[in-house]
Image 1: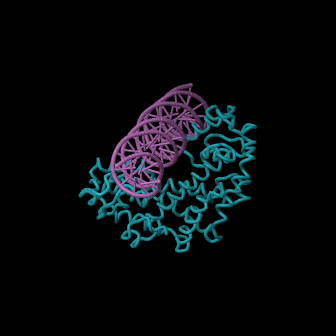
Image 2: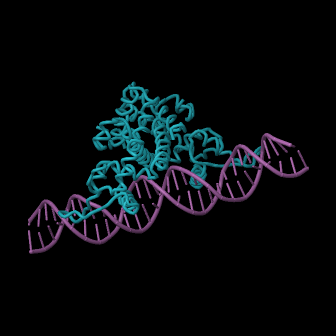
Length: 158
Length: 158
DNA sequence: ACTTTTTAGTTGACCTATCAACTAAATTGT
DNA sequence: ACAATTTAGTTGATAGGTCAACTAAAAAGT
């Protein structure tokens, strides 16, 4: 049981309380480890790289900040991540003619090949994970996450 | 909507897929930021320190590895965390007579004072967070997290 | 036109997390 | 009794996340 990890006095009075954020913490880290191992095995790329690839998409042509909007990644982190991906030959950057601050980003041939190979594998993985949930659970977990996120961003309670 | 953060082709075919782990990632990081700020404001302690305090408990007398069992924290991380907490005067360590490898850990007076001050605040915070969920959602999110964790630890799918 | 502000992205500093190597004490096996 | 293994905890190396300072280009304000 989830509550077992907390001292009774806390858990008993407030069964969902910190336990919930803690549970999210734990599950998150385990899912991350799993995803990273899985990706390492199937295509040898890093989780962050996969996320960025996914946000570019096989035929995409996008920019730094557009990716950031999509996946809400720190811009410094994304900058370094993209540098790595370019170094590995997964992504190519070409200057944007109308705005010299930004660059158009797209997958290289190698990037596309890996993307296309990885996508179905990741789909399988996710189906496997989500398949462990009931319909109700999978619906509820999404709305619960949305609500928790909103609650966490509500500055009144801070 | 949650699925909006992924390319249509991915999201449409597999609505819950990576989106779910990604949502957990996002929500987790926002909850963490929120918790850290909240703790900073209410008692000036770090999130990791709070978690350890919580696992020791106001009257607790425990060991390194017992904490680790409770909160599944990396042992190196916990070692440094405890060192910091001892330096801050939150925790005191005394040698265990029967086993010289381990130490008995408990909260100092200062630690207890902060613990007692922080606990109701954290309860309020958690009630606030959990209060944003419906009964169904809060039940479902727990079982969903349990199942996802088990699925992620299943080595068959790796 | 030119100053101010916003936007795009990079870099550095720092902090946390994870993993592996290591020491020392206790337990188990013979 | 003593060798081998397990358990407890520390430390170091490294990767990833977070924040803030910085440069440069573009847009907006006057």
